[in-house]
Length: 600
Image (cartoon, rainbow, N blue to C red; front, side, top):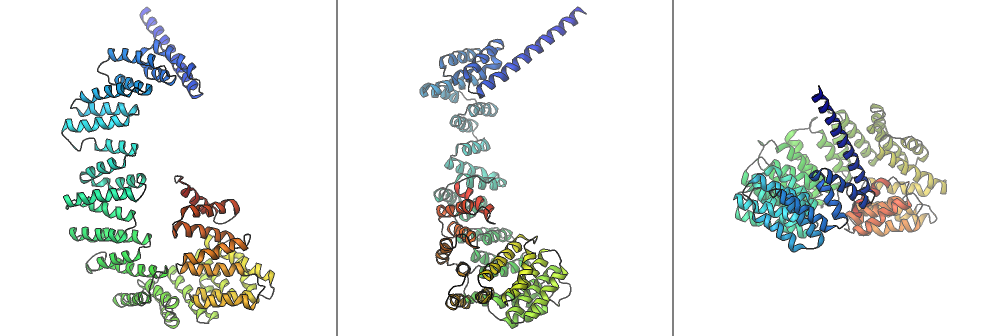
């Protein structure tokens, strides 16, 4: 019983002592955090003397914090003699000498550890880890590299070295290490690409990767991982033609189904490299109808040609070639519910690019009668047909179709689009009162895009009717707007230029400038659009289009004229001068990225 009592008393005393030490440790750390290192040192010293080695690390770091190098060296050497096999004391001693500025002594200690390194993978890793924990990245790397030699294994510690090079931001060494690592570990290619994109800072870095890859491909042409990475490298430098050539060469060698080319074409489209995407899809199609990608590639080929045209990058022969592609597709697969999408796109091409209104109208009338067509696609075809009726001077037929879609899809984005088109029809034809009623309702549309467009059109009508109750100048502007919608830009500009001559005191100057700038942007004449947008800011800084002009200038300078500094000033102007703008969130995000902030 007496023995049990003694044990209990011992346990309670030990627990109380441990709790007291924990409390003192917490207090010492609080002193350190509060900038009171001397008070912290006194507690760490007391704890170290009570329980010698447990608090060594905290105590020696407190000494170093106060530059008490001799004391730190003394206790470290003492423990090093007591535990000669434990390398943490040698590394700490080197750290002490480093902080003293005595690099010769520090390097001598580290070099001794390096020379005495055993050919044991576990001990090599442990020693490198200790160097890393002491923030000595260079010697951690040296330990791993020496370990490779001792183990006679050039692939040993690859992952550890990759992490150290990435931490050190050593681009050249990281590049070489990944290129050595990837052939045996191809699943890590995405990780390597992410590491390079985060670390590389410009063309010089990507060129370094390119030359390293070309050298390795020449030495080992059968190693496909290097060819894949070279394709990625070309993409980063926007050398899309070279990227496709590299991918095609690899695909021909592997003779696969072309899936990698198909995915690459999507990247080209995202970067508006339409010619390369077209070439890629055409290559897949040459593999024949037995390929599972034959039909998808045919469809995407035509879609890409359509995108090229809608982006403004086309010649007249592109239009005619695309028309033939759609016609060939419909001939090959027939006119049915599965190809109705192609009929819709062909009709839009004929109406808005080739101005074959009769052919477009006939095609969409046929499409809307196809059985089994998806309801949403049918609604889109009806809306497009309504637009063509409007351009064919059949407004009653147009409003009938818009109203059908509105009735079939109440309180949906498609239904609201139909209401907006009806409102624009009224605006085009000069019925501003009816248009205002519809637009006023659409301000609260669930579709933000439609709500914004409706609000802008409503304000345009209200502002200009307030200045001229007859709306004569506004009616002329609406006719120009209809020509812009029909993509008759030359006629539109002629009408816009005539407004000022016929109505010299009109209030439409900023609206006319905005319309002309949008036409130039659509035509890819960004240099021509810039002075018009700047004039809006100079002469109408508080009117409807001012914040739009500021944001558009920022976008042009950032993405079209490659002038990031000027772009940043315009995004900042949105934030400071137009805090209520619909562009405020996007402007703030772009400004932060251009400033160098990391994305959230």
